Length: 352
Image (cartoon, rainbow, N blue to C red):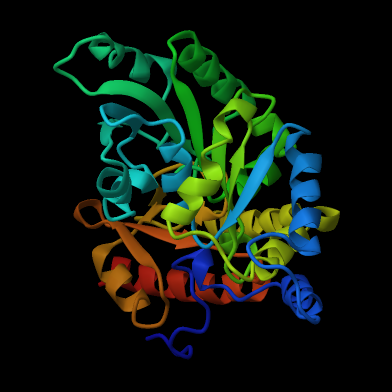
């Protein structure tokens, strides 16, 4: 029988985590007197410099309220009324954004089956027979998530291969970078190596899952795509009047590699959690742990009992696969306490 306090630490999402103290400090420091609205402030200028330092001198950045908004505005830069987006069947833009891209942009999302959340050139190639056929939506964008919704990472070479193929066929490569920081930390590389250097055209950059209070950004890496962004951001209801408070959060994450420290810690806690259940009977990992998410299959009774004390999501109810997510503020003590209860419940289940 579990004895821990109900919901001592959430393992449902890094969105459940608090705000990093450095981000809170940055918000407080921005709360000084008056400043021009809508991005005409010194904090937003500093944020733009910080993004150019990470993504290259040609990068332009637009702070936004949430990832869905950044994805929709970004895709809107390149989609025409009859176009389609090719994406994994697990993609957040398809499964978890309430049809925002379809409703707001009128675009068709074509879901590609995938074993681990990643798509390849071979997955995309079969969809290009529709090009030039007036009876079909026209493939225009390949959209990938980094990390994927299955917690897996694309390598820089895999991204570059997709980008080269996309550009050779007149397509764009979009990245949902809600957890891009976790991928770069796991792979031990720069943000640019997975985006600018690999040929990504535009991306959403996630801050909220990595210690921000509420800050995302659209990053455009091809200057010719930039001119409509100001207008689409406003139409998309993503233009912050007091933008300095959003910009200050993003700058804080990009200062002294705080983004990497936060992401690397979250990833380490996920590996600690996965290692702690590796020897349990009846427990197996559905996907390799390559970020801050763990996807184990558990005995059904164990899931029900653990959810009485811990917040986490069931990923695949038919196969009893759950998702555990760690964050920048997850501690080894949090993980070890959770592991203690997992081991207790699983062993009791095995013995019943």
